[in-house]
Length: 230
Image (cartoon, rainbow, N blue to C red; front, top):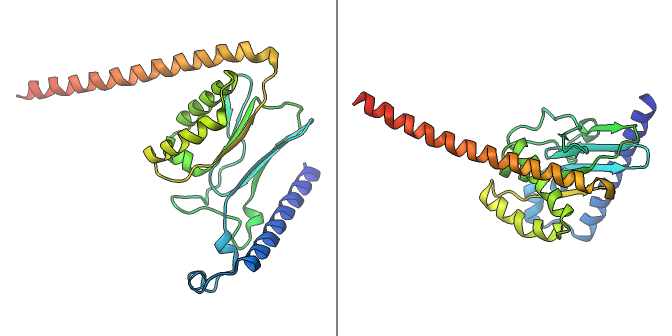
C-alpha cells in the first residue's frame, strides 16, 4: 500500500509541524521563568511540551488510527470482540515512553488503516493511567462494555465517567486518566447488542463468583494442610 503509506506519513509530518508551530507560539506568549529554564537546561523547548498522542479517524470508506507513546486504542466490532490494531511500541517500558518531544518522533509513530467499508461498533482511546489502574486487558474491555451499556440505556456517559474516573485513579495507580472515543450503533442492532451485553455481564458475574470460591477453597486446603502437618 505504497500510496496510502505516503499519504499517512505526510499527514503525520503535517501534524508534527503544526505541533512545533503551536508550542513556539505558546512559548512566546508565556515565556519560561528562570527556574523553568534551569530545569530545561540545554534541551529544546519541545521537552517542556512533550506528550504522547493517540488518534482515530473514520470516513465513509475507510478508517485510520495512529499513535506515538503509551496508552491504548481499542476497536470493538459488532460481536463485542475487542482489538488493539495499532502495533505495540517496544520502546515504551516502565516509566519511559516515546513522545512528540523526541529528537526524531516521526519514525516513532505507529499506525494502522482499514480500507474496507466496515465501521466499528465502538472505538475508545485511553491514556496509560487507565491501563495502570485496571491492570489487565480483560478488565479494560469489561469496563468499556459497561460504558457501551450506559450509552445503550440512554444514560449520560460523559457525566458518569467524569465522576467515576477520579475514583478509579485514586483506587488504582493515582495517575491521570484521559479517555476519548465514539460509539456507533444502528437502531436495528440495539436489541441484539443488549442481549450480548447481558450475556457478557452474566459471564463477568460468574467469573467473579468462581474466583471468590476458588480463593475460599484454597484457604480451606491451606488449613487442612496445616492440620495434617500438626
